[in-house]
Length: 155
Ligand SMILES: [Zn+2]
Image (tube, rainbow, N blue to C red; front, side, top):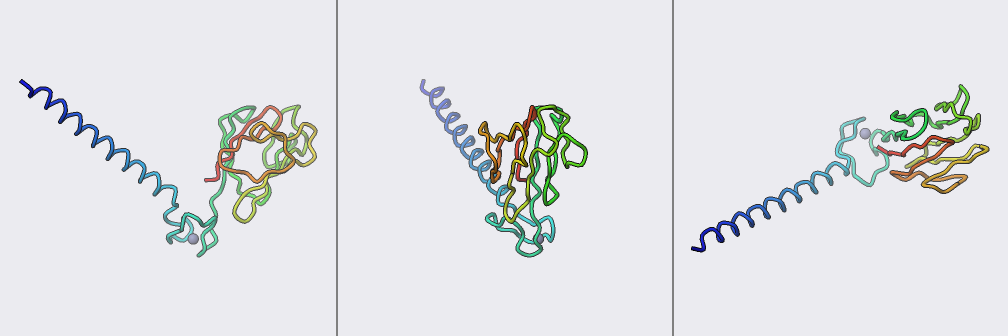
């Protein structure tokens, strides 16, 4: 009797096709999400290559997700033209940390992106493990200031 073997082959191929369809559907879903879709400002369709909406000027607000240090677990939106990081009140982000300078770093919002700069700190800023005076931030960049670490999330 070869029926059981045939059955296994049929079930196997059905499962295989189902998995393939599922994987393709997931891939498509991801693509659609990344392409932006509608502008949250004016509800018109945005093209994925636009850094900002060509109709109303809306720009996605990037966030810093703290993964280490006193702000661990907090997500801070970069809504200001310049977000400053330092140890004293008056900075946008205050890090109570002796390794952080009073005015340590700044993140400037520019056309199409964000630029991180060292504002003359004692211990410097590190991006992905490298000490840098300045950096155009890329998605997933890990920024270290003193004993704090945060991840740059553009959207
Ligand atoms: Zn718009």
